[in-house]
Image (cartoon, rainbow, N blue to C red; front, side):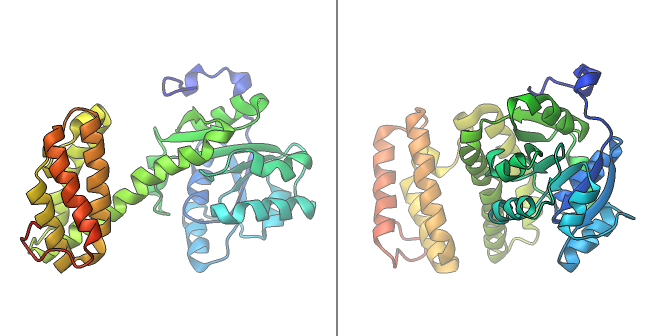
Length: 316
């Protein structure tokens, strides 16, 4: 199912019945998804959370829903959202299955991007119905997350016989289901992390450097620029590449690295790595002339070999 699918296009028999919903792990994701399911007519009945922040999130997004232990969440809910960190998920599933907390016919949904449905095999053997529904969205832990789910893509992995049910749940949360094969989940998740997580790091570094350069409002300066760059990249891919690396301005790149070594040495390795990756892509797509690429790659290799690097403004 793709982005052209709408709630109206689903046959009524493919829609999940109104379900009681439980959340194990009241981080930033679980309460938002449960709140979204409530808007679709489902009924959150229990949530578990350990930290004070988790309990506050649950109280804000799921008011009047009792906080209980994980096993009690499964005892009360027909649909259980396992919204815990990736590294915790396998042990949690095994523990719930071994202690008899999992009930036959119970829908067990995890939101990990890394794992598909197989991580839920212990629960499957106990009779549960396993679904992997990963929202391709960054969460704040506030009510704005529920709004952002509208049009959000979800990576969906489930047994074939549960595919329609999984996709229907995503659509009820306002999302768009995108089917991901079990063995493609790690690559799918790596792709999302490469784009979204590293973007935050790059933007934060850029803002810090602009502040050091005397810019009073780096967020306002970067907003229009980064918005346009993102839009161009999504529309045109590598054809949207601009800047000194794509132009082959080796001297400018070397000067940048010199400044970074002086004012932000922790950013040098990332700049050099991204410059090399950008040069490779620009060269492969015919945007960077071979003779200019050679000079640029020599500069980058030279910078990698010289821990001290050039001083401010020096090229080599």
